[in-house]
Structure formats: structure tokens, C-alpha cells
Image (cartoon, rainbow, N blue to C red; front, side, top):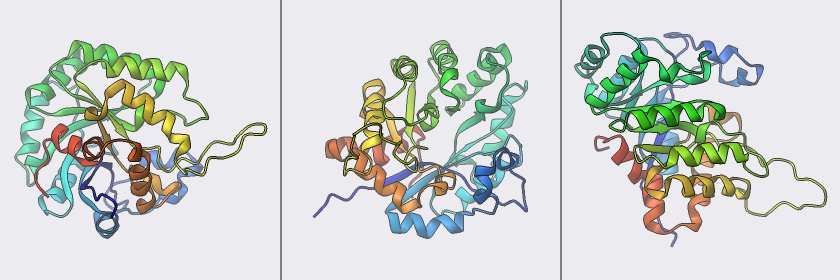
Length: 296
């Protein structure tokens, strides 16, 4: 009988367009299928079928009222065990804002903060003094900082993580790398530099719904459906090791290319070459440790 793993989905989103617009959905015609509500009630049965025991829900907009709503989902006790929310890291009262969030229903499930660096025009945003102070406040509160960024922004993350060794930085989606036949050497170098820092982790997320790139010449496709992702897993393993990688579905954006069940199955298949202990860590244990998740 195949080994069964207790899976934690370390990265997904929810949104209700009636409650809060998602302006980023209007930035590309390719995102049109996502311009509808995706609620936790939609995910719960899919997670149960896929064998997912708990999740971490992650912010999508830079608005102070979203995180309380996400914490309320965690307080309800169904599936969500941790929240990566948002607060204005450049504001002088970051510590007070964190304390306020923690006092809300579900506040004990606030495990980290994220800011979408993808949309920041300033390449030195992480280097700003006020942002560094805000990140220090996260460290003092025992929270993590999720990095969602473009590959060319990774050197800035290395500088910041080096300057703040007391804060755990979690890289989302392998740095939003473009999946090609072979990994881009510049991305490999930058990811390796980030992985050298002991206060960093990385999510295997955002890649499982990416189709295999076209082959050239007389090449033939491997029968393994995740063969095109294996070079990326190997780079991530070399950079971070199996104890600092974690699975995330990136639902619902993943539905542009695959169902939730297919994403989970792909993660299980991709890690199939590893030991049971390593797979247990990547598929669930590391997320519980990194985010100090409450039991679900």
C-alpha cells in the first residue's frame, strides 16, 4: 500500500468580490476565470478529498480589513490553521497593529505577514529604513515574512535576510520562476544565495499547474508528468534542503491550469524520489514548524 502523508497546504487564498475587490485580477486577460468568488467553503471538500489536513491562508490585497476576515476563518476551526496577513510595514505603529490583530477572533493563528513586492516600483523597497524597522517588529512578535517577488528581486531579499537574522523569510512560489526546459542560471544563483541563509525557507508552490514547456528538435516527452519540474525541485533542494521546503497549492490561481486534486497529486509525485521522512517534512511537517500552526 502506498505511504499516506499528512499534508499541510502552506499557501492558498480566498476572496469574496462582494466584500472586497481584487484589483490584481484586472491586470491580465488570462486571469478572467478567477474573477469570481473563491470561498473557504469551496476549498474544504476539495482539501478533504485530496488528504489535506490543514492550510495556511495568505493575503491578496494591501488593505487592513482583509486580515481580520482571514483570522475569522481560522477562528471558525475548519481547515485554516494559520494566516499570513498584511499590515503596513512602513507605518510607525507596526507593533501596535500586530497586537491589535492578535487580539481579534482567530488572532492566535496570525503566523506571518506578506507584502506584494511584485507590484513595488522601487527596487530598493526592502532596503528602506522604515521597512526594515517594520520587519524587525515582525521578528520581535515571532512572526514570519513571506516574500512574493520576481526572480530579479531575489538579491534584495538576500540583503534583507542577511541584515535581519532573527526574522524567518519564506519565499513564495520559488521566486515566481518561469518554468522552462532548464532553470535559468541567474535564478539558480540567486535562489542558492538566499538558501545559504539559515533564516530562510521556500515554498514549492505556483509551479504545479504549469504545463511542460515545448520540446525542441527530436526530443521526446518523458512519461513522468512532473518531469519538467524535477530540475526545479533539485535546485530548491540544493539551496534549502528538505527541512526548509514546504508544499503550497496556490489555490485558486492554480485552477488556471489544474484542479486542486491534481496539484496535490503532482506534489506527491514530485517528491516521490525522496525518503519518507523528507516527504513528510516537505508535504506538511515543515509548514507546521515554520508557521507554528495550531492543531487541526
